[in-house]
Image (tube, rainbow, N blue to C red):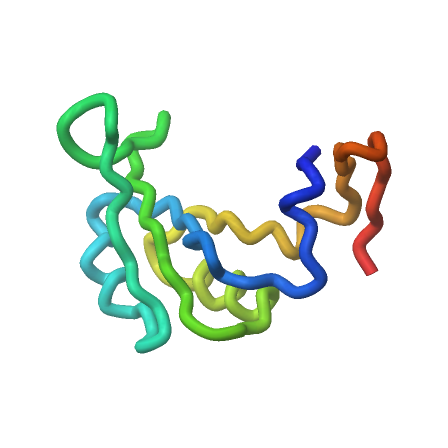
Length: 110
């Protein structure tokens, strides 16, 4: 479920793609990012240090420049050793419930 401001015709990378990374693999993952990508460890605003998941892993914000195929980007990033998950859900989500001023509607993946 999302609000209608999240619905766009074409995926842009105004916000980072988030990777869940095993801490021991962080340096490797950072070195594997392409020239059009910049990774930053997500830092906690509530405590000192990085954000840790419930499983003890790090979140890496990856800023992507230019337009890229979302499916290809997700596959490449998920394929990096040490990356457990990626915030692009191109192969998982087939339908979204969108809420807006005109009410609630369902959108189906084309």
